[in-house]
Length: 117
Image (cartoon, rainbow, N blue to C red):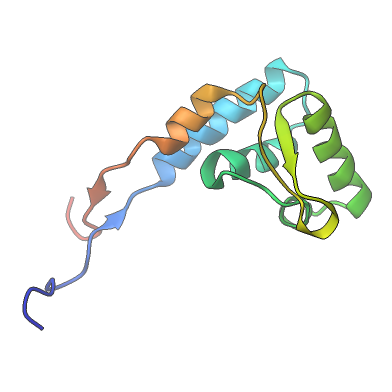
């Protein structure tokens, strides 16, 4: 096919970006007295723009009640904003969500070739 790239395509080296976002959120959770496990929910919001209860529950191996309680507490604190009702509900960044974590998550990362140093 004319114009098609030859050889392996470059891939995004994202581990550094994810780590920086995670660390910023862990610091935020620590400063605000949030449970360490809530960083998983906050990271989902920072990286994907939203988090669902089921995904958070599964990622942290929580009971339904634990996941609901954590998300309710984050919502009450203004960190998360619920969207929708019941089964279709998800949470986005609220007024108190740390803007620095969102900025880090939205910073483009350079593509690096996986076979070159």
